[in-house]
Length: 315
Ligand code: ARG
Image (cartoon, rainbow, N blue to C red):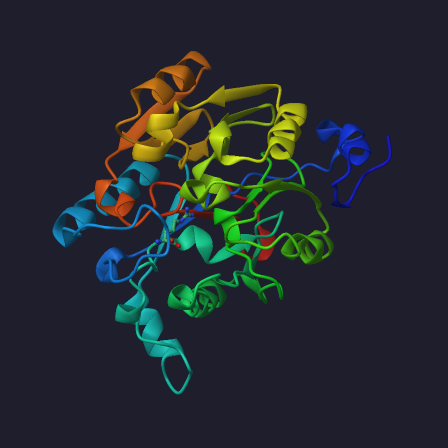
């Protein structure tokens, strides 16, 4: 079968897609996290945002999330905004870290390339978060990643664009934060097949709140978030769609997690999703992310999975 590249959008193109014929891709095992020192609520840009942050409690939850990742075979690297500010702040038109209370949600700053040795920066949809990727650019360069500029269309990084496990296929969430046009650019630049997924519910404003690929053949999903066409696409490609209960998807962000091998890391407070995942053969590790949920984010948004700089193989 002929390899298909570019954005697949028509029913015929999608019917002809065979995931196992796509080039393979090594999994990303470096986890970037942003220190929560400046995390706070000072504006509202999604329907979940509200309440008061207990900063000491947020710090404990973030430390716990970091520790849980460190117990897996992933390598955790932390971006410290205050340190990065010293290098980007000088003379640049970048606001100081205290002006970025959402910077802890690193998944939105960039998307790793298929091999993971580079990143494409985000173009944030809101003015409030606009200069967060400037911090990520400086940090990623320093770590040795190749840093590519943002697309011209709005694009919120790995919050909306999710690599299919093991394949050069990118799931492209759009319609709320990210613009569909970003994927025309990204398909070319990343030399990847992209399947756009239209999001229609503001409560699930990023793809990572409603889709968590578990393996090449299975994914955890929240169907309420998607346009009918998007659900058909997911159904056509994944053999198994594990549905997270709607209340847990909204109140506990059950789908917003991370996967390494057979371990799924997600928020506590999702017994139904946990049971379904366990039945599907996964071990579920729950972390309390209650403080971060007040800003509309959880496990998935607080972590950005990257490859290894320079493309060297992980051990
Ligand atoms: N307050 C942040 C925003 O609205 C939350 C980001 C959540 N990130 C995610 N990947 N879902 O942008």
